[in-house]
Image (cartoon, rainbow, N blue to C red; front, top):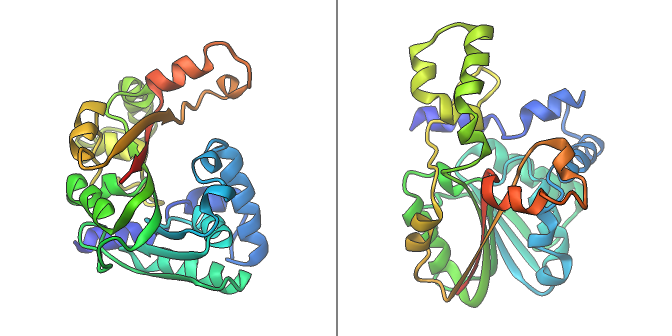
Length: 261
C-alpha cells in the first residue's frame, strides 16, 4: 500500500509538465499544460461537452494533473473531485482556488469504497484511474451505486488488445538496448510501457481489459456504448485520413465507456 501512495503522489502528468519547461504550479503554467493536454488528447471534450455538464452534479474519480477536473468544475453546477493520493487532491484544490470556482471541492477517497450516498451524482467521469484500483469490477460497481438513475458515466479503461500491446516486444528490445537487462523490468514491462514515474518505476497495479470482460463488469447499467481512442501515430490524427477511424476502433489503446443508469 505504501508503494501505491508513493507512486501516485508523483502526479500523473509530471513528466510532460517538465518537458514543457514548466517548474512551479502557477495559473500560467497550468494554462500552458492544459493547452498541451487537450491538444494531445483532442477527442476528450466530446465525451463531456459544456452542454452535457450544464446543471449537473459531477463526480470525477482520479484527478491526475487536474486538466479535466478544472474543465468539469468550470462548466458544471457542482463538482467533486476525488483521488486516493494526496498530491493530486492538493493540485486540484489549488486549481479551484486559482479560478475561484464555487461549488467545487477535491478530497481523498478510495474508488472501491466511496463515502458518498447512493444516487448522489448526475454525471461521473473517470479517465485512466479505475484500471489501477485493487478491483476494477468493484470500482465500476461503486460508480453505478453513486450515480443517479438516468445519470451518465464516462470511464476510460486500458484495452487488453491494442497497438501498444502488439508493439510491446519492440519497445522492450529498445529499452533493453538503452538500459540493459532487468528481471524486475520483464515482470512489470507492460505496466511500465503505459505508466511510469520519474524514477523509472512501473505503476504498482494495472488491469488491461477486453470488451467481453467490460460487458460483464458493466451489466448493471441500462445502456453501454463502447468507443476506442488513443492511436498515437501522428499522421493518422490528420482529419480525413481514410483509415483513421477503422484503425482507432480496432487498435486504440483506450476503451471509453459511456454508461447510463
